[in-house]
Amino acid sequence: MINKEIMDRQSVPNLTLPHPFIVISGIDHLPHPDDCHPHRWDAGAFIFCTQGQLSFTVNLRDYTMKAGDLMTILPGSIIQFRERTAPCKYFLILFQRDFIKGLHVFHSIFPLFSKIIEIPLISLHSKEKDFLQNYCMFLQDIHHNEFSKQHPGIQESLLISVFHTVNAVYQKHPIEKEDRKHPRSEEIFREFIHLVLDHYKEQRHVGFYADKLCITTKHLMDTVKKVSGKQALEIITHAVISDAQVQLHSTRLSIQEISHNLHFPNASFFGKYFKRNVGVSPMVYRKELARSRS
Image 1: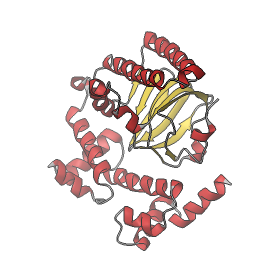
Image 2: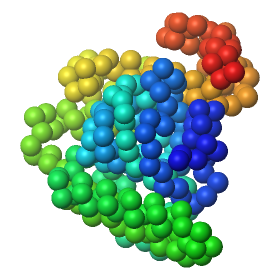
Image 3: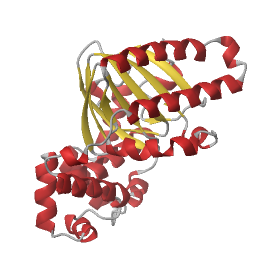
Image 4: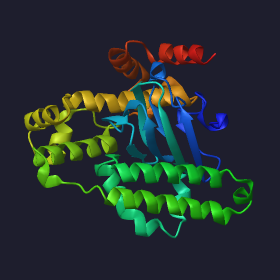
């Protein structure tokens, strides 16, 4: 059964683990699409879907996960769940951001993280699916065994094993840049997304990102539209609004403080920006969240 302390609706918005890592198997325990607020996960996660389908957004990019898919979510990611088919079954392995830095394996699997940025979601081959399902079942049994809980070295070895296993699976799925229809367009789009994640709090104009990429604003807008089907400004706005919703959802910061964190000139300007894009003011949004939790 899923750990209520970790995964109830009130704790999910800012997921922080009290243990180095946790292994969960579940059905429909991820947030329901009716609760489609963004969530920031301080923890990292490997999600292996065994049944159903789940659609969500991670760091401004949309994904649809189906049975046999493996998804890696890096620590600090902003996630928004959208749609799912029922029942949705999966294995969920959560790990602390700081814990992996102390593992001796960190440097040897570091290339994995750059690859995850490129392709966080992969579809497994039949033998990989069978292996990973058996592996996750074994991992869960050992992880929850009282003997292993009494010996931290066993828990640490399990997590090292997880990273080696995931690394081996990802190595079987190379990034085929030469097969992409629009490789330069994809590259521009990825760089744009990385820039937005770095600068959305201070810069909300498309021209800033075009200048950083040394291309014209029109070129950037056309490229983003071609690759993602979205407007560049829409993606920037989504980053700002997602962060605002996370802070309204999972902190007690005042509207003024949130406005300051997002570099708006004042709370009034922030309120108008938020209402224009969400449909309600930040205060009303927070009150509606409070009512939905009660």
